[in-house]
Length: 459
Image (cartoon, rainbow, N blue to C red; front, side):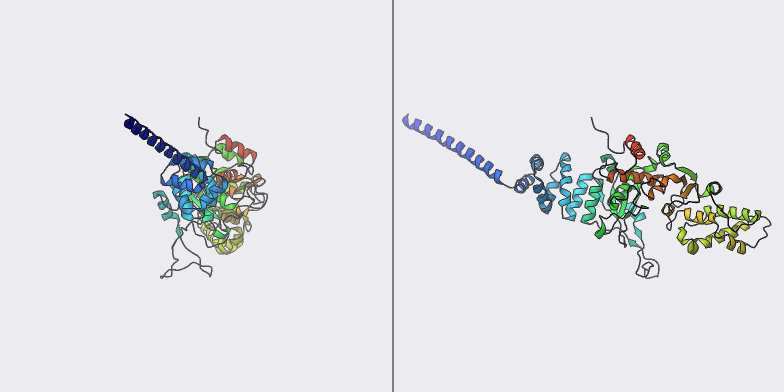
């Protein structure tokens, strides 16, 4: 009995010692863990794929710890795979410190679900149509292929770290439902300094932007007439990124086609090139000065009027400052063409074309037509017109609007057409800090009543 009792007592003591050692070991591990760095703890949690612990560690991290994580390329890359949907917002605190382009691009995709580059089927189709083109040579022409024709290049460019950080910053404050409509954002090559721009096709959910690496954060103010324009002080690349996204959400003129929006500036659709008689009627009714210089009689007036209509229907737009070198020839052709439609015309068409070529109405029509060579809104206010009119895009509608639109505008580009006004309003509203501080009260009222400033709150 004594021996059995002794063995029982020994067994109990051994068990107690074992439990004591385990408790001691757990305490030592806990103490060791307390002294481990944030990155060590996070690394262990990532290895175990312990998403709950990763989330807890991220929530308790200090700013300097998050910055160090962002610069640890391997750990940052692995941590992204362990973030749940609710924790993706932590990327907003990390991305500005990330130095690796691949990790930064991954941050962007995980955060927004948007590809940087022509990746989706829609993005590849967009690229096929819009991302191939010529490239200038040093002599002012274009680089040629072996047959002497303009060589065609793939214009998609790789993103840079500064570019990805800029596009991230630009869209992170936008309504998530708007970002969700975008599939791909592509960077397009540009051979020119300070040449910020973009283009979008809502059907593809894709757009491109172009920028110069050494000047990506600049304010080029390229769409502005001067410091009085409301968007003048805002960074051009950020505005362009958001501007092009606005075209995606404005698919089929969802917002820019609304009567209450167009009434803010006073847009009126006056028709297309085929409505040439109506457009010339408008110009004649709203011009405050002489339209037909060189016209001396009724026959001349009939010819000049018809030539103006023919010019609306069939001509290429050129800026006023290049009218003499580019526009005069087609004006003369239209004047001579008009003679064939006038019965028993007596005057010599060559002489009359020479006399009439600089009539205001011809200069006005040529500079009011949109083309690759001419964006009419950039010419500014035409003072001889009591109401402005020009074509927004080549082959598209001619829009009129009151002169007072120039008194308080977001930019010159706002006045290209209603779609561009919407995109300029959307970008300027969201890029400004605080939001809406650079746009007018009437614009803000419509914008916010329409719900474009934020997504509806979930209940």
